[in-house]
Length: 142
Image (cartoon, rainbow, N blue to C red; front, top):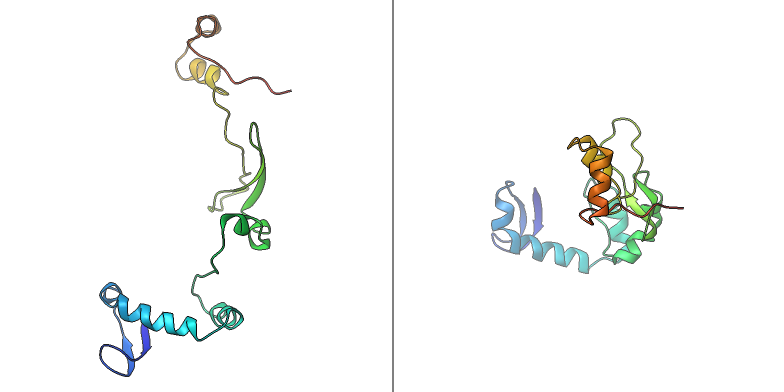
């Protein structure tokens, strides 16, 4: 990493090894603070947009979720979550086939399936657990 400016070491250009960034954080912060203070948002966008630096302007969560960048991102999808409604949710960043964004399960939605499939309980045993109030299943939609 190279930095140009004045500070510890005087005027000029310094090259920092990756491990030196932490020790030089005050110098780097001073250089970056001055650079950002001397430019308006349009110039910062133009300069950083031509680099491989990962950056964005500060936004609230509401501003971020409402932005075109997020809504147009192919990883984001609208999910209809029972009890919550429709909202934007991220999918997996791993690309190995098409994986749809899915809603979260509702509490109790898979109780009977887990008890039967993983624990081997019979329908009668599961029904008795329901009747005794030991377990509950999610209310049926519709």
